[in-house]
Length: 187
Image (cartoon, rainbow, N blue to C red; front, side, top):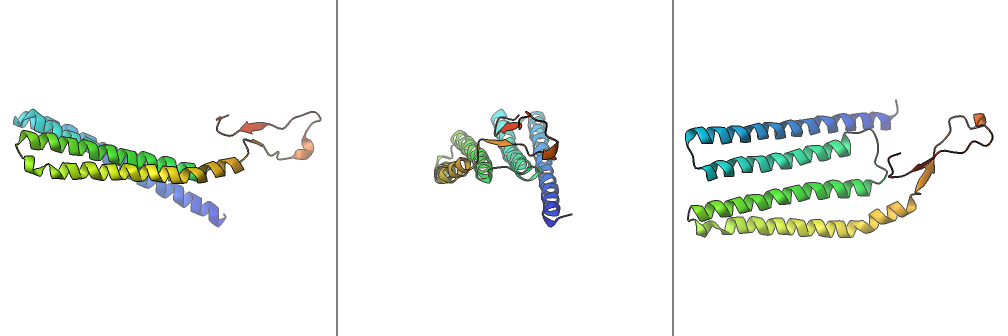
């Protein structure tokens, strides 16, 4: 076995393992959110507080789920992506987008909670989280803008079609044409 094949197998195995760990943690957090909601209802807590706790847990669960899916797509497959720049751009954009949504939702929940508890003096914390999420999204936009040129240059160098290689070219019958595969078509 070649060293590159062994490394691919190790990379794929570890990618699947870490992905399953994150997906399992995410599932456990969904169950925990349901338990928090049920226990809160049974204890007679305020409905708003129950929703805030459950939504907080679900937001974190969503971010962990997205991380697990990203790891699975990037490392859990033996197939190599033809354009690594596209793969990285897509993974980073999805993960940073999910984290930004989680931060914005968390800050909005904190604003609602602080306004209901008359803690207006603490509103600078959720505002700081909103500013942080905005900076994160601006950074993502800058990353996507700066990496677009590399991604486009890489795609321009790749041909749009690639003929399949024949195992035994001498067995090709006269008049038989090469099979053409179009990149990105899925066929």
